[in-house]
Length: 416
Length: 150
Image (cartoon, rainbow over all chains, first blue to last red; front, side, top):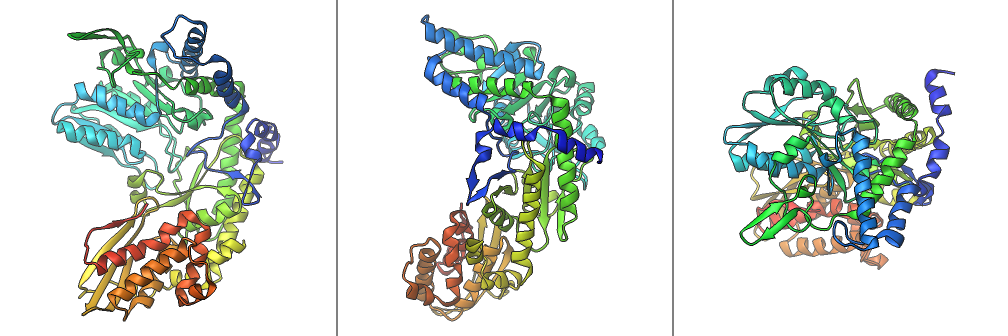
């Protein structure tokens, strides 16, 4: 038995699948094969139970009342913050800001850090492979400030050209914003090295970790990231909540994002004293059950043996890529040396949208389209791909279902 | 598989692979772009009018099989039709792909367009089928604004 086979055979995927009730469901009469994890991951029982338990036994508003439930809700909310702090290996829970998701986290940094730091003629550096959420907030900021958005190109494999990235880090660059793992192609960027390059020129770096946290263990202090953002729903937690990690001295230097209750120490009509970080950035009643659910997701993820998980995910990806590459007329877009659970592909003469519809009727859920990364698509001269994205709960049998349903696509289209 | 067979009918696969009137019309009276930002379908429809009659209709662009076949079949059906007839077919085609046309005789009366009846079983694909028709309607109305369906 090859090493690949033995990894695929010994990983307890059947047991893990029982933790995710939706995976047992059927669509169009066929067993669900959920391969759209890069869009959003499914939820394990501990997350579902934590949210249910919060509503049935723990709910009130946070940071307010003296009564029992308010204290309990506050405790659960702040416990979740500490869980996330440990999950990212941040130095302090003060560096963990609850936001709606990675998108809001990037917008927050652009609207606060960007507001005070970016001047006319300055530059913001991103890469060609970014998700729209790590392009548009910077584009808007640059327009408002008379600054310039610079873009580090990618090569034909979908890897950022590091020499170009380094060259574009200039005396005018005020921040670099880079994805950790590409949602469209699966490329794992060498962010530690890129951060080092930027820091040599005293440029802070924001890392969009939305696609990284479900696949690898992130250590923000080892990376020395200045900002690190992710969304809960991609790491098996609830939607509508996410995290902005920021080094405390940076967060402290930034003006508030939104204003209202909870983010203030005192208000008189002449002046408001803002609360300390992270509360300064959390105006209004927060998504408490979301935070509780995210805390449960972090606990769940931590309970897994990550050496095995990563080995399995890489084996599953390798197996799927080998099998898919063998299909005539099919081409994988994004062939970086280091990739995480994403296979973006195109088929000759068949539009990705048609592939997606046919796969759906076979129970196979994939994403089709530009994946909110139109510049990356343009780089490859295409407008869309079909994308299968994996999580550790996907099985070898599901990859076979994917292959089988791709054959159906060919049967329908090729006989004409 | 039966739903899929109903969607990807022979006529649709044929027009997708060998689209008719698939060219730019140099002396067009009007051309309008149609764009579906969600899936990236992107077409331009060219019209040449002779009085009230569509004397030439062509298109260029790219997209899924449903949108391309829809544009192609539309171009073959509308040549020689009056403005009013084109708009009537536009309405009928909408009813068809939304599953609102129940009478078999009405559906058969649409000729080749009837091949798109299966689209109604795939709600997210309805917009693919109607994008070329919306684009054509704007061209007939001499409205040069880019059409966008979501």
